Length: 104
Image: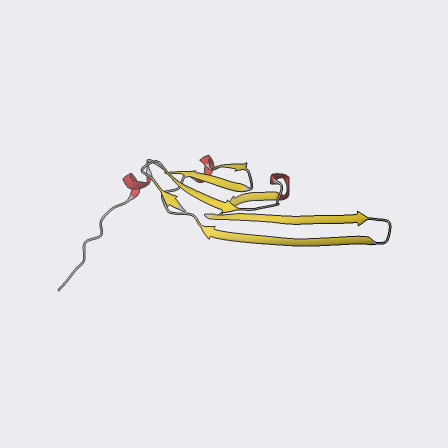
């Protein structure tokens, strides 16, 4: 995850996984990425027959930063790389306040 003044960017490399098999959700301040990879390979030749199937699923969750605008999150997939943009909430700093420490 990287941070700029305007947003956080999360990138995940998902080689061989179609974007249709990936789901990004946000609930109660937690961003979750789930996906499933299905691969089937079959070869038929004169003297042999080869068939292989592999399946796998994954799930990753992370707590959103306090100043992320959950309602403005976007996701994009290109060439096996998922990029999730989490814009910062401009009002988050306005809600922040300093707490004085009593040192008596």
